[in-house]
Image (cartoon, rainbow, N blue to C red; front, top):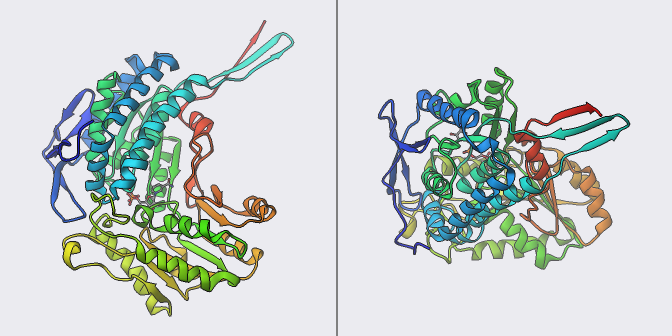
Length: 491
Ligand code: NAD
């Protein structure tokens, strides 16, 4: 394993097309990626044009139409993907450090959660594809059965908040089921993707099976990936607004899209909850990942009987969280991704203040001392806003919690469901009847009861309403990344 301090620090990041790390190829346009901790330059990156997008799609198309990967057995692909997972594990610390520098996410999280999950995604889908069964229906003289050939070329477009983990959530199932891929990472966090691509080639992935192009969305390489008829599937994770653009573009060629989008999830704490569980989980639920997590429980509803006690204890815990250099193992919150995003987060806080809300803690950018050159925002808790306010309805995507009291199960469920989003719901109660009752009526893709962020990769993952279209995970990923086919024969 590469020790910290010895990790590769690329100064230039090109596209990976076929087996080649290509420069801009057709032009020399670049952009820069910065360290959100101190604003220093991390790398110059090739800024993909539409032509780069076309070349990457062509490489993926050729690898699909003529290469060995789609024709290998799931067991053969399993061997390559497990080797890749082992290589990721071997480079865990160095990959995590690079991810932390690029994204500002605390090293404890990238080392212990995000990068291990990359390897887990690869192993899970390799195993799943090798073990999953098909259907067969003997019916008198007829025998019917299903087969699941790969869909073809997959365009994977990912966001910056968990860069390699979310990219691997797309790449792993796409590859395990025999597809070829063009990945476009977010321009804010391009650093780990190419290294992953190199490891994939080292693991034995044939050239052209995984291609990586860098750059932006609208009118550039990202948009190109969504309008090319040689693409068979688009898997997109990002904001709801961009998701709608991607779906509109894909509709021109009737390309199926799986869209994992924004969220404004309700976290509900009842009087009977075990607060020793509910408080730390609720802290994690909004402040882990610097609050830049789609699943965040960013609307916190607390039953009136425990509201005062909960708010006191919750605030005390939030104040204890260490904000600082994300490379430091004692840090809980690192910097936000960029100043522009921080300004957006802060505008929501101002909106609450102007609308009669109370900022219980936090509420302004940290600018002194070690924070001077970074994009630091402290854990922020706001009360006095109701569920219909803009700050309760729109995704802030930062370390800002809105705490709202409630009096009854029906009232709180109505508020939880009164949202354009429907990604997740979090519930703390010791009344299991209530837990089941609410889970059945809650309009969200994932419900967690007395826990948070726990993931069984066999379960469907996705959102309702503007939080997404489609589900991925286990058999749901197989349905999306393959073309299920019915075969009937007379015997
Ligand atoms: P974004 O929508 O701005 O960008 C996402 C990706 O899309 C980037 O790679 C971007 O370059 C690309 N893109 C932008 N315009 C495009 C276009 N017209 N065509 C093709 N590609 C285009 O999102 P972001 O700011 O990077 O990420 C934050 C958002 O992602 C939040 O809303 C968050 O909730 C959401 N998110 C959702 C999940 C989930 O699983 N549901 C997970 C993580 C993040």
